[in-house]
Length: 438
Length: 169
Image 1: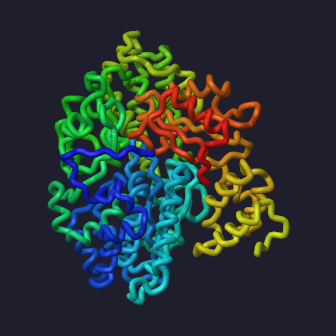
Image 2: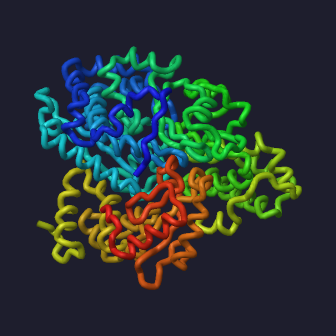
Image 3: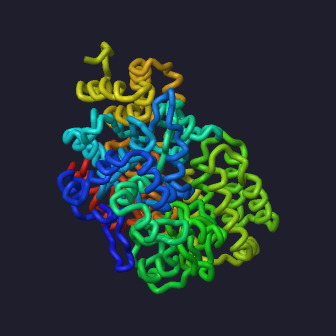
């Protein structure tokens, strides 16, 4: 069972019911549950969307698209039914924040889904969880069933005359399905291969109908935003980055855990104060700041605010909020190889630059790691990664190329020294172990 | 009542599937969860499972196999009664994930995707399971085990061997 952590700098919005037994519907009701959806019914779609826009909430899956704007793109009139889709396929290495929401506050997901439905005029929502999260799916299923039993879901919700149904869905193991169009394919009972865009989901989505698809944390924020007001929520964060965010700090820190910090919170402080600093008093070597797809930051680059814009300016991304901390013992060559081995394993093979690029990079880095690298290898890896960027249907190709580029650019000397036989860091595993399962 | 004359599933699972195909705008949407739930009961996605699911969803067996081959949790061969899935992705790797995997290999005497001769355990190295802040982590069937040490793993194996393990389904 995940350990709950706490720090005085936390601002608890989405995590405010954690550890209080709010998976129980009565407890959830006691803690202001299902009040926001009733406000939403009373005040209507335009009000909801305006509050969401005012909140400055940006997608918590990683792309950071403004949620209110996304909801406003859905056409008011549609011949086909509209859908709300909650992305709980959390699979980005370093990310485990949705895990704790499903565990501690599943009704906030149910209520948030209803609010999104009211905003866009949809009668049906889907909550999709990765297959590995079976125990969490059970918790969400119970929350949905309890909401039906109270008459909160189904026909005429809260006497509004509006019907709303929620279906929960299990995946069966695929990183790629976390991409929105691949998730829709999976939900339609197909291979999780991405769709070409445009058209975007807001126009042609699930079953061809207009669809709003949001990350689970984004959806869980909606009830809180309506309760406290969009502007008040926005003020918790930084400029153009409203509110708070769940940050999962993992790797070589003293107190790993999921912490809710205001947007714009300093990354260095998050590592050294909130997460207790580097484990066993070692020195910091690098930080992968927002899940494995984000370009690495050097120790001198981490004095930066954790929001989408500041991280972008720092040459990386806020991503999924999964901060992975590497101490001085890590071999970047090994870490880069482990990262690309993951993407090579998960590439669905639909787009050639991704399928071939990840494979070539993995093979080249494997050779380097084995000690048989030559001087051209580093440049070749960079060339391959650069040519994957922006050339695939979905962002998996970019997700594989970006961290690779970060490693070879910022640690170029370490790669070159490694090839020369001067190996930095302490390898954790042998090549045979590393590529064994992939 | 099931429309399928000779179902290979238990009456409970058959009833669950009868219901599942009715809840989506399109019946086929039940395919991915059905494959996983069928695997939970049968142990793997056998030819008979493919045939029955195809029939229930009005699909070709080829359509079912096409989807089956995409998802990493679905398997076409039996696993052990308890499938041990050790994460070695970055956050776990930094906190001893490979040490745990090696320990499991040694302790169970099997490698990746192999089954112990008595059929009790199978082992798999898996990608990120979403337990990064509680690393190193693994799943035994669907149950999560966090902050692992070799000693903790030994104790867990004993618990499962004694039939006392949780069976989340």
